[in-house]
Structure formats: structure tokens, C-alpha cells
Image (cartoon, rainbow, N blue to C red; front, side, top):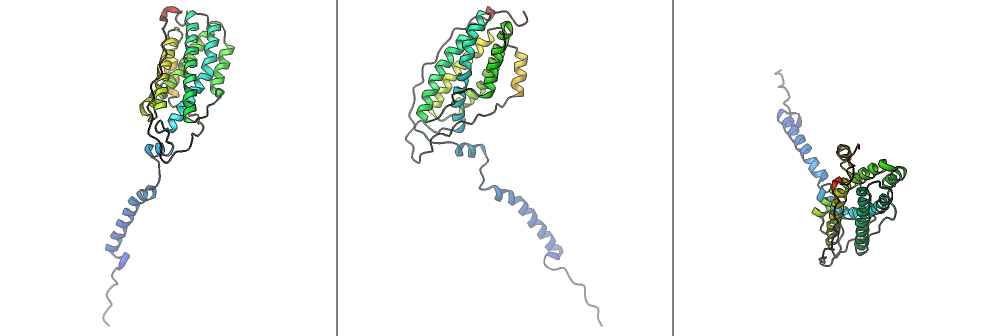
Length: 258
């Protein structure tokens, strides 16, 4: 009897079949991530669009709403801190810095409340826990120790918000928010300069603190009115007159350590 020839591989068990199967598996692995994420939102543009609503002053993003809330929160603790510095500061430069805080945040608080009213946004009426903690530290400090605490706490807080103001001013599409950012930029920069002019700012400690906390936590702001399906054209807003403040010379107070 003639021997039967060996069975040749067929289908996926053949050499060619195994190669084709491997190629198909590789292709599936490459295609799967594209398919599985094709309908998912995850990019910065997706997030921006998902959290942006329409207003008659232009689109209002989540960052815009966050910024409006932060301006209000800043005034809720920096106004009393400024009044306190006017009374407790041991040098003219510290008392002048307190006056700048009072003037600047009185102006900004009026502006932010007007903007929030026109955009239909609710605003907080009390400082947050961190801000209240800063006020408690200032309440407990006395004499030159108070001057140092005041200058460094307020300078750190203004340095943190300065970058947020710049980001909002550069990216917002809302004319009301843009005008508020202009005013906030002028006021915050003035406060930074006036606090540094006290002579008590520890720039080494400031740099370390800002580096350690380069991304401040976001305080969630109340939801704005729902988006409209057919918003009116954006209404241009004339910029409000920004306050100007004369700065005292840096030599108005003794340098740290004296």
C-alpha cells in the first residue's frame, strides 16, 4: 500500500494563514485605539467647547467664570487686610500698601459685581478657607512681624493670581471679561509693586512658594445661564477707566533684617 502524503496546513494553520492572522491582529491593535476614542472628547478644545456658553457679550468659558469668581474672592479678604495694614503697619510704606489694597479692590469689586450681574453669575460673599487662614495669621501678628507677614502673604497671593489674569486676558472671547481682566491686570500689578516697595518681601521664599504651587486649585464657580441656541451678536464694551496709583520709593521703609 502506498503511504499517504502528510496533511498540508490549511486555513489559519498553514504558514501563510499564520502570517495573515498575525498581520490582522497587529492591524486590529493599531486601529482599536482610534476606533475606541473616535467619539470621545478629551482635547483642550473639546473641554473648552463643552464648558462654554453663549452670551450677548461673546462666548463665556469655564475659565472666564472662574476668573470672575476669583476677582470677587480677592476683594473679600484683601479689602479687610488693606484696612488692617493702614491701622497696624509700623511704617508709612506698609500703611500706603494697605491704602492701595483698599482703593484697588473697592474699584475691582464694583466692576466684578457689575460684570457678574450682566452675565447672570452668582458670586461668593465670604473668603475661602485659605484666605480666611491668611487673615487669621495677620490678626495674630504684631509690630515688625506683622509688616513682614502682610507684605509676604499679600505678595504671594498676588503673584499667584497674576498669571491667571494674563491667561484670561489672552484667551477670553467675552468682551465683559476682557475689560475686567484689563482692570484686574492694572490693579494687581500696582499691588505687586507697592508690596515690594515696603522692603519686606522675601524674594527667595516667594520664588520657592510659587514654584511649589505653580498650579493653584480652581474654585468651582456657580453655573451660568444655559447656552442659547441663537445668541445675539457680541456687544462691544468700552473699557472702564483704570485706577492709577503713585508708588512710594522703596526706601520708604527699612530693608528686611534691620
